[in-house]
Length: 245
Image (cartoon, rainbow, N blue to C red; front, side, top):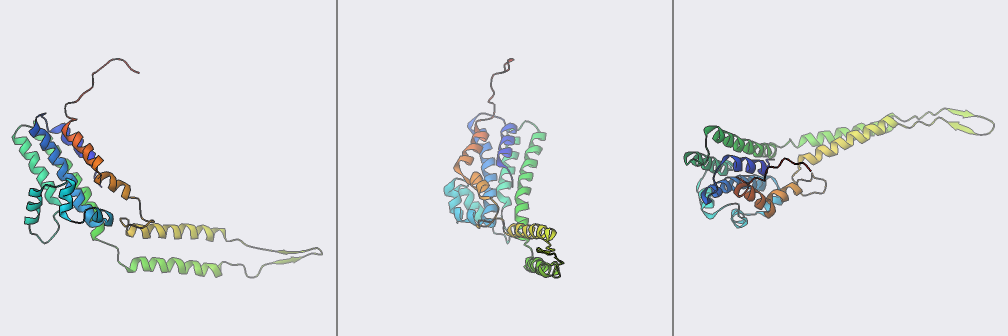
């Protein structure tokens, strides 16, 4: 999953200018990256899809403008359009270079590479969602593990315990299968973890806690943070002093 704060800091450092046009350029680049992340998470997470059920909900949340929604829907292709907001951000970077807001080609290349790295993180999530494991794989693993321990339940018992008789009491040679118990804990535990990873973006209690990170990225507070980084952090500097606390 891409971290939008890193991209926002990079955009704030490479796109210069304190006028309204420069600030809106930085904000638009970061907002388009957030939009691309929202589009990906809407398709792979049930909770995010419930949070943004339609494209108009993205407009209402501030991740997309009505004009951008019209352009997004006007592009008719047979596959997903996650890359389109990233393309808009790249176009804004190139326009900023032409207008002098980006002072050299090296910073332009670094900005495009940062957007590319952010898109690759989103592509990794979609790849895991697009290529699920075959249904027979978890069935074979489950049957094999449980069948193995059912066999161990009988095969590793000491049916003929040695009996030592004295005048006072009987002594039985009892065997506790410690290694079998350890195997059961490890194998069944690994199997349960693997089953949870099959649908780690679900809503069950056993799924991984991705929802906290989702809420962090999709919340208004995070949007305000990234916009503050893109709008106001550029050029701000504390006074340099020689004293240490």
